[in-house]
Every structure is written in structure tokens, then in C-alpha cells.
Amino acid sequence: MQRKFQFLMAAVLFGATILSACSSGATSTPASGEVSGSSSPTALPAGSVQINGAGATFPLPVYTEWIYAYQYIDPSVTLNYQGIGSGGGKKGIVDNTIDFAGSDSLLTDEEYTNGKDLQMYPALAGAVVPIYNVEGITQTVTLSRDTLVGIYSAKITTWNDPALVALNPDLKLPDQKITVVHRSDGSGTTEIFTKALAAFSEEWNSNVGAGSSVEWPVDKAGNGIGGKGNQGVAAAVQNTPNSIGYVELSYAIANKIPFAQMVNKAGKTVTADADSLASAMADFANSFTDKLTTNIVDGGSDASWPIAGYTYIVLHTTSMQDCLKAQKLLEYMKWTLTDAGAAKRAAELGYAVLPDAVRTQVLAKLGEVTCSGQPVLK
Image (cartoon, rainbow, N blue to C red):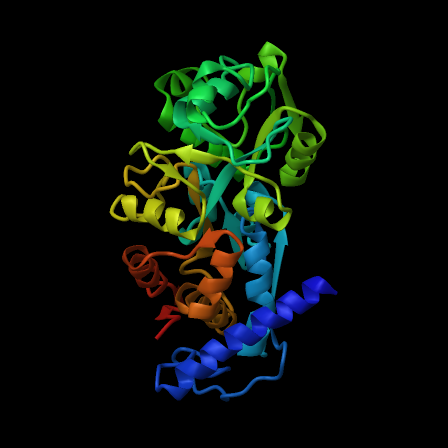
């Protein structure tokens, strides 16, 4: 009941944004039923266009609320998104069993080849945060890049290690062994987290590397345990005194789990939020490949959260057969990228929408999508 109320409030907020834009003379979403290059009717029955997506769980909370709200923006569209993991999403879009995929991990060369005309589009950025359960500690713990690597490398094994004490002089950290929790399943969250560790430490990069799953040094040392999904990691941390793990920021916020601050590359102590994510994105705004992909870990600005990553939407760019569906899908994507209400709700959930320098590139790429040889967006 509470969730339904939150969705309704989000829809009211988003609807008010659209109404405000219309009353001020701003350009609105193209009329329902208007297909590029056609003279279709301007109105369609509610739910007449069915769009199915699947993939990453990282953005699932905000996608769920955006999709619920969008039915008030364009009732002709019914959007579905299933959080089945980045790997499942990529497989679905390559196999043409879904209309769009969500992925935190990048497509491989083989996936691009098999998918033929795939393009990745950054949708928003999210943070991965270290969560902890330390006996006697209710205040926020501060970690550095080096200490986080040290903990996951099994080189820092107790909470009162001098390096941790130096970062937290006002906390009485206990002389207790650190239990280190990680994902037991392959995940985009782990990929972002290990990319950050690899950026923090050349030794980690050489010996462990980065990926959706890795061989964890703490497992070999005997103080590591695995948990499936955010919920598994969170449960393990919450049920294990003196433990540490990592989850998506949105999950930590929703479940009121304490998470650490980080000392970033610039030597500044930062908290994961929409502003520190926006700073991380801005650090790498000019580093995109032709597939619009880049890493945004370990940015150099004072305000940047160091364990950040894009979550992407993956589309076919020239082979979509249903041009009305293609138009409706791209209109929805444009709305998520440009609507002030959508951005506000994303920030409240712990995400950050794209800064102008990045959004401009994504909108330009969306403008290149064609159906039956014609641009989908006008």
C-alpha cells in the first residue's frame, strides 16, 4: 500500500511537470499515435502499444517508478521491465526477444556482432557504496581508496587497523576481525566495484582485475563470504557483526543501511549522492567511445564519488520492425532524459541523471535510430 502511494505521488509530480511545461509554451511529447513519416491518428486506445524490456537490477527502483508514472504521460503505452540481471538483458536484446535491454556491463565484441545493430545509451548513473556492521559504532565510517583495497585484499583484517583508526579518529573501532562480504553471483554491481578497486590499486588490477565476478582474495584468506544479489549481501552484513560489504546506493537508502564515506582521488571526503555522481560523470564527459560507453570510477574532481557507474539502455538502431513501437520507446527514453520531475525522483532514490554534456550526446545518438529507413525521432 505504501509503495502504491509512492508511485502515485511520483506520477502526480511527473504529471505536474508536464502540465507546467505545456502551460509555459514548452514543446511537449509528440502526440500519441504520430509515427515518423505517416499520417496516423493522433490518439490511440490506452495500452495499445506494448513495450518489453529486461536486464540490470541496478536501475530497477527508478525504472519501476518512471514506468508507473509514464502511463499518466502517454496512456497508449504499456511498458514492462523485468530485473533479470545485465547478462539476461544483453542476451534478450541480442536474441530479439525483448524491445530494449538494461545493462550495467558493456557489450562484448561478440555480442555486438551477433546483435548486428546494437547501441548502448547511458540512462543514468548510480553509486556502489560500502555498507558495514561494526559493533559499538553508530556514526558514519570513513574509508579511503587504499583501505578499501586493503580490506578486500585481506591485508587489512581488523577494524582497529592503524590505517582505519587514522581515518576515523573520533570512533572507537573495535579490535575485531573484519568479515568481508561480496556478491556470489555475477553482477554489474560487482563489475563497477571491482573496476574501482582496479583503478585504486595497480596491484589489484594486476592480480585480481575487474569483472562481473572475480576470484576474491578474502575467500582464499578465509574471511570472505558471498551473498546473492543486493539482498544477500545486505542480509549477510546485517547478520554478521564487524562485517563489510557493498550494495547499490538506492538499495542502501531504501533499506536504511548505513554506508561509508570515501576519501576520493583528490583527497576529499565525499558522500554518495546525486551531486557526487554528477561530478563523477562530468569528469569523464569527453571520454566516450563510439558506442557511448565509458568508465566513471575514480574521477579526479573534489566532489566526485569514486565508485560510480553508468547503467545503459541497449537498442537495435536500424532493424526495429514496428515503427510505432520504436517511436513510443524513444519518446519514453527522451522523457526520462529531459523531464525535471523524473530527474528529481531519480535523485531521491540515489541516482543521478545525465549532465548536459552527456545528455546532449545521448539525444544526438537517439536521433540516429531509424525504422524502415526513416528517423524515429523528429
